Image (cartoon, rainbow, N blue to C red):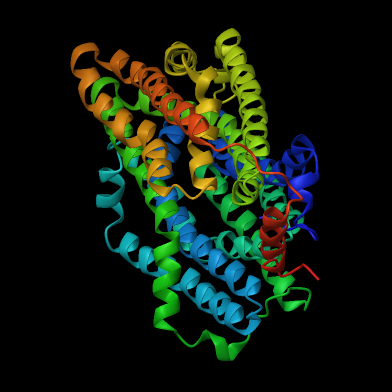
Length: 472
């Protein structure tokens, strides 16, 4: 969340300039977050082998569930903190922050206990074969032990955004990613710790990120203070946090379900080598999606504020520029993947020609419609920005759940492993068509823009500005 000192700027400043101001911290932060899993796979692939990539691929949906729990609390508490600050109720905002911080410790602790009660069964459920299981245990045992600290950093970093400090929040993610990269290299290639070294690098990176977040609050620089008396559980607040955070939690949970089905399907039709290829594909698409999601997040407050002020011309202009920017990224990524698939796959493996060949062939098919995905992501997030939750949910879930999973269950029955690779472009193409129908219909329904400085609009802008805690 990027808080401006004068909300009127949202109605007068160039939409392109605003989009850049809002987007770049989100892009940098999200790319750095995505580097955790990508770097893990690159280093273990080159330093340990293809089975190690398969092990991290099995671990990925479990880590997504851990992240989903952090988002359940982090996003829900962040929204409540923003609302309470907007209402000039700082003491209530501090109670929300303290209860949120407590939940960010408690929820991962429960998941850690469950994991260590049934580690082998859980890893097999998520797709580990007999050969992959020992490596998956080596990696996941360490990651789960550090998940409590990691959850605290991820969740409370959202609180910092709620205070209007996106650069500090971004620096948290950059710090963790850089430490993870450096330590992966040291632990794997210099100390020979193998996949355990990669897990240690991940955990230590998260520890530093969490320490950086906590230092912000304990240094006295934060708007919202963490006070011991506020950690007493407030059931209505806890329920409100979970209710608000449920949507992003459900999305991450859907991602995990999709990954589990994908892992099991490729293992059934083509074995552990294909599972390693899937891990590489997921790393590549994650790196491509993050800047697109950053642009989409940057556009949300601009679109939402101007929608509320009935400046529909600026709503359309922001949406158009966001779609163009996201499409430029998706088209560039598509061209790179189509022209250099073997070189990209080779970055994740050292000399495993079978894995490189399989991944390169899969990449050309799997990412066949990636050039249009920028439009789909921005279009779906538009409806979230204007408060149309039902349309936003349908479009957000259309590719990953409503289309991808059914296609994944059907197509391999006819085409085997090729059916797995063909699932993504078909789901992408259909989801883009659905999104286009929603967006075109929505643009036709938008009323003409109202003048900025007539009496009615001025009253509305003043009301919006007064709700901003930074407005004086």
